[in-house]
Every structure is written in structure tokens, then in C-alpha cells.
Image (cartoon, rainbow, N blue to C red; front, side):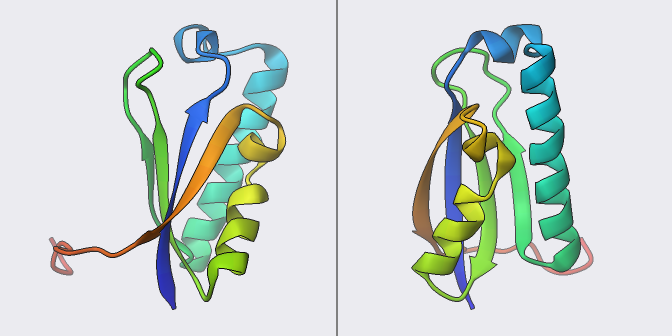
Length: 103
């Protein structure tokens, strides 16, 4: 299984400051639930975002998929990407220094 990272950036920066419209919050809830499910399944290893509230802000998802097509499908099926809250970009990933188990 290969490792991948996708980076997301909000298309509407105001959402980062205000928390978003009702519609954006609903999509964000779906985005979080999607990533939580993938975490529970063992696909996603890490997901999070910077705490910046400007154009430098970004989120990352590090996950496993057998190939680029499968990785693209995971990224594109993210409700935040489908709902056009985020632009997304996929990268192959290799962890150089993982934290030892149990720490």
C-alpha cells in the first residue's frame, strides 16, 4: 500500500473566520465524518489543518491507497472537495521519521 497526502485550501477564506454559512457548516460536518470513517477503517493516518485564517491556511490528509487512481478517488470523494469548499491537490508521500508505537 502506498502513502499519499492531499492538501486542501478553502475557496472562501471568510469561512475560516466566521465558521461558514449554514450550508458550508453542513458540508464541513460531512467532510469531518468522511475523514473520521476513513480513520476508523485505517485508511487515513493523519488529518488536520493549520490555524491560520488567511490565504496561507491549508489542511492535509495523509492516507494509504494502492495506486494514484484510488488515491484520487479518495480525495475527490471528500465532501469538502465535492461541495467546492476546498481546492485539493494530491501528492505521493513517504514518512521519514514516524513516531514509535506507544508514544
